[in-house]
Image 1: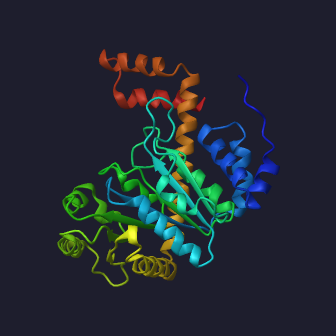
Image 2: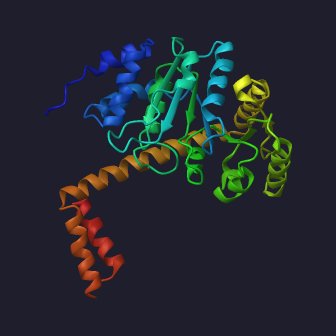
Image 3: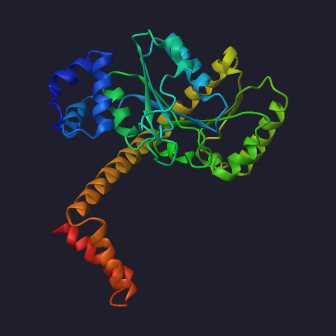
Length: 321
């Protein structure tokens, strides 16, 4: 069935004017890989690049959604427009977001200055969705001052958020072995702010102490390097959220002072360009016979008629023609 045509200029204009329905439609076009997506991105490009992108990651059960809700409230108290992308596990049946109702974020559902969107990971590793960067651009261009990106919560594969966010917040909780998990997952390298949530539980002080010790072992002693703070919160009661906001503000100021904010955003866009280019190459590979063409080269390698590098070169030549 042919896809319905889209009046892209009108849709972008409505999104820029703050229409939640228009923003939702644009993100749906992104997720669906709609044919008008190139036109959409071309029209959004002049208006994007201003939002502060904050990634929120951590193991399941540490209170990511509750913390995100509390941060939305804190940013709204400053009069800022906030966008939230909550990346959820995919339904094995529909492919949609499994936790798409986001019940714990309903406090802000009626606020016209808050846009909340659930996105399905669709099997993409790293705790994010393949289309997350372009969805962020939609919210950015639609006038969101802050975009909060909450990852799936899959544990050791969530380090991808570091390449997507200006500031990465890593949540942990006492009694969940998160200190050990953080060390295993490489989370210590990607966290700009660490939050020990559910700090009213036994073991919170020990978790904070362990985290600070592990951070001290890292190579963060050179002058000018950011030393990630560790903040205790009880997000469900909004305890410690002011301290988290203070840590976020200090990190943003640090990024702006040393030029790292611009460098992070440049790397983010470079990664996005590379991802789109690779997707285009895969599509072109499909036109050349797809998997069968690769399998034919594989048979040549197995038979000793060629080697893997030469076979890859032949494949690249075919893609370039």
